Image (cartoon, rainbow, N blue to C red):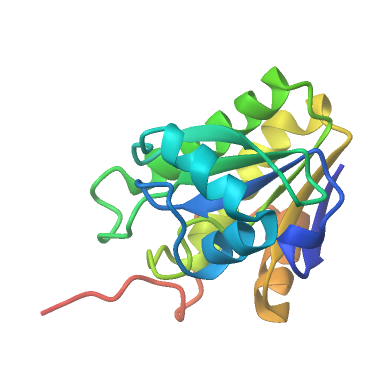
Length: 179
């Protein structure tokens, strides 16, 4: 079952939460910083031991003080107009996250909107990638959560989930074109 929730991913009672991490895996802003703060200093030490992570890949740590048993750190792509492999990298990040969860026999997993914050990925396009991969893995999980920070993002994910409009963009989500 895929569900959309507006709220704090660090409070979700699921087997694994996904962290929208940077390549260093040493914490940052947004959801990454929130997860590191909530999990405690042990997460930073465990992340440091992983030696970083390339874009489009994922690595696993324990959840420490989180309700989730595992944190899957995925590095989404920086949006550079969509012509530098961004969709494939984002898709691969979601897939690798699911595969790591399955290796740990996780039955529930929650994702933030990967790459849509400071990395600038257009929200509708990212939601279409996310929901598309979630649907592929849906039969193998009891619960898949798209955890959105804002009500607007939650509405967008719910719309994509219900209507299934891959690649559709609203004008505010369309990448800007330069002269």
